[in-house]
Structures are given as structure tokens and as C-alpha cells.
Image (cartoon, rainbow, N blue to C red; front, side):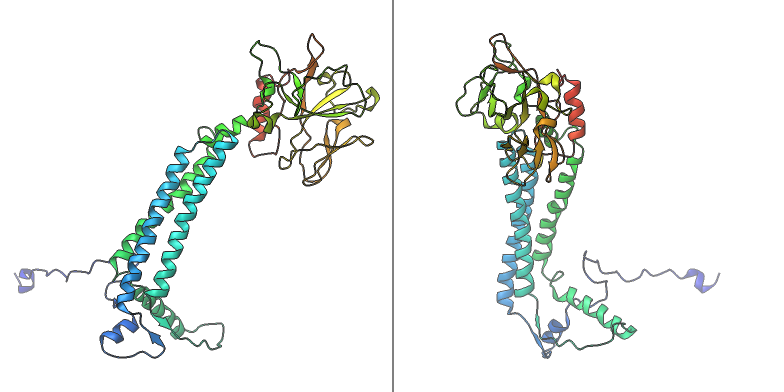
Length: 371
């Protein structure tokens, strides 16, 4: 047996542990400026920060990163706690989400700015013009500069900065995942809100089990069909019993228009009118403004916000402007006393279009919206 067979392999020297985001082992942990300072030398064009001020700034940066952490956690909690379902609750949810995310991003931004301006060295640089293509020595300089910048940032030296930065970044990384979960519209709070957008109170009944009457907006007076008999007349009406319910009126407000029989075109559902009286949603299908300006001679309904124009005599079809679909028509009739009442809800969702409206229309029709 030879001597080599009796030799025992010696373990390699212990490899230094590498911290995430730091240069590879063996690379000097101090930047050029800090290394020169340690050797008692000066580097032209470089000014090191005062260490006492740098330590104070380090605490400020750590505080900002900690605020970012708690604000990001608050965003996630707000998303779960503040459910949507009405315009009011949606406003509260948006306020909580917006405020917490603003504080999180602002805290992170302020922390990074203070880090760069009050901790890292200051350089006086002169940039000379050169050819666009870089040669190998230039690339090596860029790589060395990158490593030097990583060292001078203090990411390795200043543990408090490193740890609070990672702490702040952790919940911020979860924020997009929380928001992307809304793409599953089957069980999220946003899906409940979308379902509420598909229906109005016109599909409900009174305490006595009777259909809702149409009453004049502002006065609450019910309307007899016999009293609304002037062709070209227009009224703004709301559902009886909901005159002061702003959430209900945001979707259920109507305009009534009286036509002569020969003026009504094919776009109007004649089974949903009574004695030439047609009821359309007052909520513009563009962004939800009240479309209540009416030209009697042309039978045009005009939205004053963005000039969307609808042909009231032809099913409120869009003839001009950014609106993408007609104003929904409400089926109406009269009760045994001659007052105008709703036969049921709209057959399609009212107001601006949204990305689930196609499914919404199908659901309304399946539930008897065309009654």
C-alpha cells in the first residue's frame, strides 16, 4: 500500500456565508471610498458621509421601512375587512386600500431616498463622450463599479437597513397576489358587488305584495297614465318607497316619455309600454351621468357629460357619443287604479358597462327580467 493511499483528504477552508443581494465571497466588503478611508487615503471627487449622521439616517430609513411593512399589512387586512356591496361601503374600502398602499409605497420611497442621500458616499463625476460600443475593459469597469456600488450601499455592513428593507418588501410582494385574486369572480367581495349591479329595486314588491308604482322625482306623487297624455312630455320618476334611498336611486331612476303611436319605431319593446308611454333608465351607459336632456322634435335624449345621444323613439339606441349601448327599457303597465307601475326589473344591467355585464344579462333573463 502506497503512502498516497494512507493520505487523508483535508477539508477545504470554510467558505464565507453569502448574504442575499451581496457580492460573491472573496470580493472586498468595503467600497473604494471606505477602503481608502480605512487606509488613511483620500479619493479625488469622493466625499464620505459623516458616520454620526449616517447612523442617525440609518434609524430614519429603518423607521420608514418598518412603516412600509405595517402599511402593507394594513392593506391586506383592509381588503379582507372592508367588504363592498353598496356605493358607501365601496367608498370606504377604496379609501382604506388607497391610504394604506400610499403610505406603504411612500415609506419605501422616502427610506430609499434618505439611504442614498445621507448614507452612501457623494461623487463628483465627469462623463466624457465615447463610442456606443463598449470594449472588454469598459465592461470590466462597469462590473467593478456595480460591485463597488453594492458594497458602498451598506447593505452588508448595516444589518438594520438590510433587515428592515427585507421586512418592508415581504408584504408588498403579497399585494399584487391579493388583488389578482379578484380575477376569480365566483367568491370574492367584488363579485357580490357585481351581482348587485345586475338588479334594481324595480323587481321588488311592496309590503302588500304589489308592484312598485312610478312616482315623480322630488314630489313622490304617483302618476296616472291618463294624466300623462301630452305627446312629447317627459318626466323624471323613481320607485315608490325609495324616494330618499340614494343607493337605490343610483340605479333605478327613470325618464318617462310620451309618444304618438306613429312615432314609435322598431327598437322599442311595445309589450313594455302603455298608451305610448315609454320608460328608460336615466343612467347613461357611458359613465353613469343623468341623461335627462330631451329634444322633443328629434326624440333625442342627450347626456350632458360627454354628449352621448340616444334615439328615444327607437329603443334609446346610441346615435352619437362614447356610450356603447342603448339606455335599458323598463317594462311598465297600470294598476287597477290607473297608476303607472313596473311589470318587473330591467332585462339588462343599467348604467356603465363593466367586464361581467354579459354574464349579468344572462342571469337577469334567467330570473325573469323579461316578465
